[in-house]
Image (tube, rainbow, N blue to C red):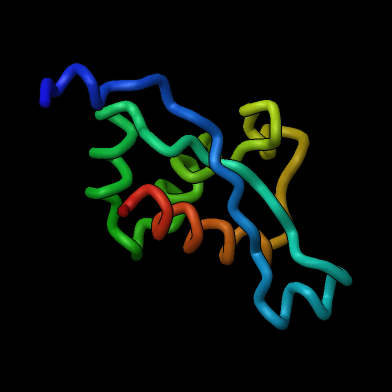
Amino acid sequence: MNLTELATKPQLTKITIDSDVIVEKYGEAVDFYVFDRLPLDKYTQLASVKTEDFSSMIDLVKELILDQDGQPVMDDDHVLPTDLLNEAMVKVVESVGK
């Protein structure tokens, strides 16, 4: 197989936050999207960010938590509640780390 056959354009993948705590608080599971492949610079940043450097992790994950159109959910005027942000960060790391 040629390596070029495996190189494709990133596709949006739906992620569901469905923990009991989130479903109880918000009344239903919460969906967001990530790309199934990351540019090398983003992947390297994510792999090298230290868990104690929370602000750097949030800045990076902020770019990775997307809506159904592939646009970032968070910007300067829109921020997720802390409980959802924490769970989304875990899901993003699990998803792109595979």
